[in-house]
Length: 194
Image 1 (cartoon, rainbow, N blue to C red):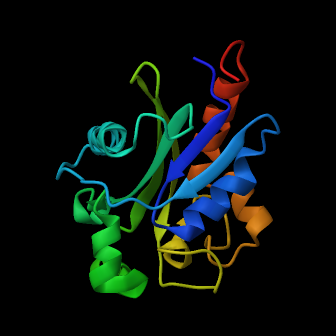
Image 2 (cartoon, rainbow, N blue to C red):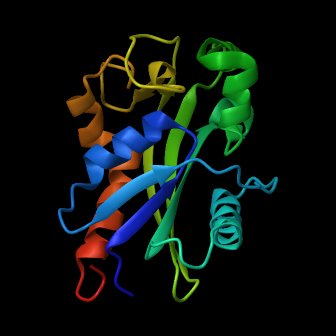
């Protein structure tokens, strides 16, 4: 199950750039492309991600030159909204932006967890291996100008800055994506995976 050529499938350039900086494995040839992949409607982020990854196998030509594909799914789970927007965060951001999402919970329970789920699809076997990173925090009034998506409205527990106020280095030490990428990197560096 050797993976030396990896294709990240994402339409979000911020995710692609962040992943490139985080993965940091010299032996890995990495690139990214945007494909319009179908997403099933489910509150289970692992089910959504697995479906997307398997759908990508059907879209890509057999000789597309990669050992594995990777999808990156993110969820923002707010206790005050019974777990919403969860994996539907992309559409909430599209319609409400970070300010609007904060306004939904500003007078209630703002406890939130940020989740990144990386799904690695192995081309030869069709297997999908998933890696999850979760960071608990609060949904706050957007602050800062860094990051992307909802970064400005997420304050990780124990921190005094939102992701949007943090430097790239600060965020990349603690983020949900960092935790998931670290698991992926460890898996890749295991014997016979890279």
